[in-house]
Amino acid sequence: PPPPPPPPLFFAPHTPPPPFASCLGGAVWVIRDRGGVRARGENDAVEALLVAADARNVSVSLGHFEDHVWFNKTLRTPEYLSELAARCIQVQDELAASYGHHASYVGSYDPQETNARSFAADAEREALVRNYLAPVWGSARARGLATSAAPFFSPNTSDPKEHAAGGDKALAALPAGSLTTAFLDDDLATNFY
Image 1 (cartoon, one colour):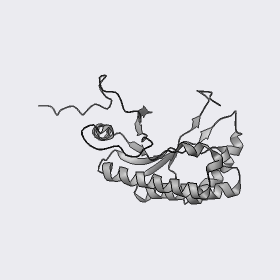
Image 2 (cartoon, one colour):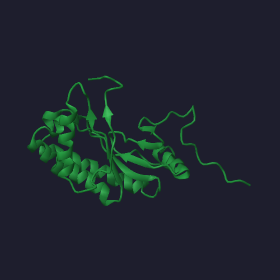
Image 3 (tube, one colour):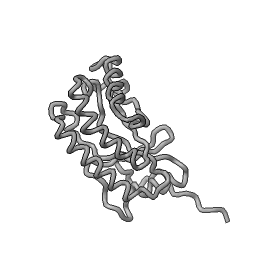
Image 4 (cartoon, one colour):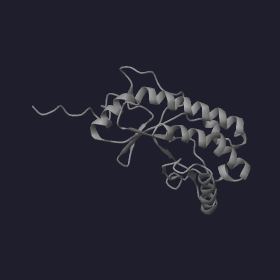
């Protein structure tokens, strides 16, 4: 008899999809909820998604902790950045312990969106690199995971050249290969800003 079909990649209509799962460009990206890793067990949607991704040879990047304080630039002190990095690494540890056995789990997505203001002043950029980006991305790379991020850009709020120059300076201050994939995150489609 033929082998059984792989488990469904998407959930049946009577099963609501988890709020943190989406399919984008042929790769499945799972963005973790703000509370960290959910309880394992029979209803573990991430486990089900990874089983399906394993069966289909689909790569999955699991996002770590997202903090909405991030978007309040005035609160981004070196102390805050270090505390946030520690929480993100803790969630990376939990994800690795729970899902590291899956071949499809290949990457770590950083949900903190940088923007042109993230790199505006040298001291702010240096604190961002030293206290957040280097430890968080370095932790993922040390596990052998790809890293990805989506720097936010809006032509209504920042100059593309300024944004690129600041991002280049930040990446130049990190070890080579710290960030393996950058997705463009803009408001061109949504026009929020």
